[in-house]
Length: 516
Image (cartoon, rainbow, N blue to C red; front, top):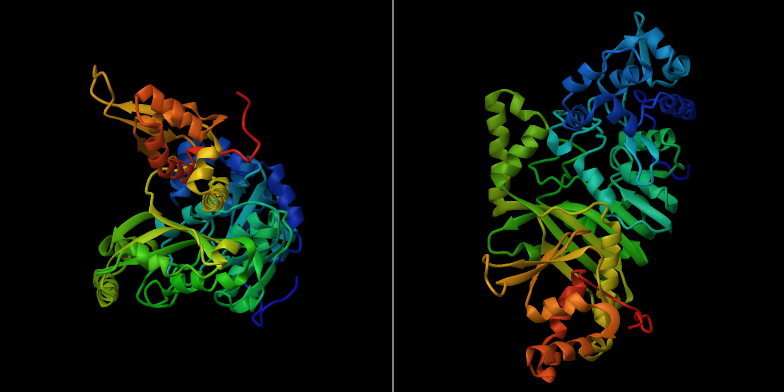
């Protein structure tokens, strides 16, 4: 398995993976998969389970079919008769390895096992602490310091925005139950997974083994400490980004002041990425009086890296405190205790002059242009719906930045463009009006952006099929609109740059124009 930490990875209260292939075979034979769960439970009960609501699933699993047994056992934490379990699972091995305990003719699961569908139809299983198959901001309700969560919205978001291409080495920092390591194992020759919590490393080993994936190199420690000066082609992290007073819960509270953990993680990444490598993070950042949040996160970007930072949501400090107090179940405690904890959160924010918290994605890419002092740093707010997985759109974003850095205005006017796939044009105006008030180009893929364009922009985009260079298209538009073609050529390249940067226009490679 490679390097292991001084702390035993295989906690006494967690299962061994010795017979994981046999268990996996039994689970698949009973259709204990993401598709099988949806078929059995139906969409409403399946969605409720993702919100940690179990009653609809309990009602749907009153039968004695193998799948009913497995759902009650591994997802709903209900005991089942040993005879029913033995008809579905290699019971003796499951008990011996510690997946199940047997008492008075009944068996119980010791861990959550949740089916998870991979991006290419793989049947995977995420192993986590009991009651933690889903959770996070939805309210895991646990105050156990070392609890290890399963699948949450943050996990799937990070997996979706990650660029997936074959790489030699990948690093998952703060691996938790191993979801990101599992994804990385599909396209990385070597995966290293780290966590401050040794229980998390043990769960990652179980997740990989039960999912039929190659093992990862597991290392205990904080941030980059476990990997020293090693470098990687891909780095991913869903870190403990919650800005909180103290470090009560390992899975969410970073233990550093304010947003220092996210800042430190991002700033230290430049020295750990190989040329052309990508790093993807989820993060929280403070909105502080007298400081633009964009300036704050821009200061995190390390030398030698391009960056794309997207703020997806902003909460004021009261909303933020309430969200994470619910997450740990503090709202169900003694009212005085709840008030004291709430007060401590507000004290923390007041001390830092913070009036809000932003949540979003940070993607870095190591590039020669950035190392030469010409980094591309794009910071934006985009709270709207997107189409996951976004990994291809993320990779395309950086390719477009490379293209635009290399093109002056003359080169843009000589280039050939095509309208990106599934871009539609909308005209907005009063009913019956001769001309629209404005025209909107809208994407139906990726970031699903929309942008207003003038008549020239709309006409230009509408005829971009790759057959003519941009300059000749503008000349034709100038003739139709009785405009000076020289002035139109002078003022339009900036608009073309924006349409390329936001993914509305795709540049063709030199010599790749479509025949007219």
